[in-house]
Image 1 (cartoon, rainbow, N blue to C red):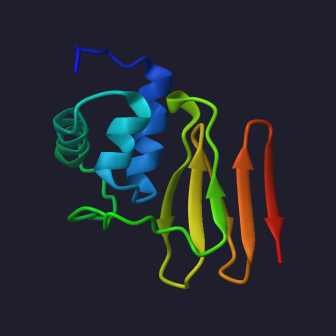
Image 2 (tube, rainbow, N blue to C red):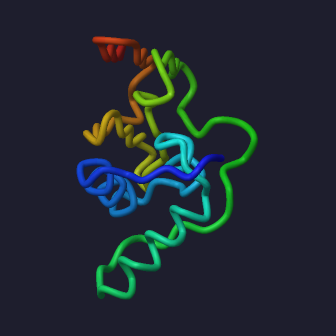
Length: 119
């Protein structure tokens, strides 16, 4: 990957994603930076005394979205980042905004300009 400097707004969004426990691989893909850059940023936060969830390992090759969730991003910049919560719900971060979708949802569609949840 090329060397890319993140703007202050992007750094704030990256911090929100780290604080939400998003997997570093998803964060690196979201911003188009190397995963080592994400780990370096997390180290800087840790050195500043900021506490955040420890996320280890990679997600399995399959998606962690509950069955029925359809992910239809418009571009890599707006690609939703998802993770399972301990209560079975799914946390979705889109453009730095975090949404929690109940485990009772039968289908979730994420597309440009809309999020649709069917129960």
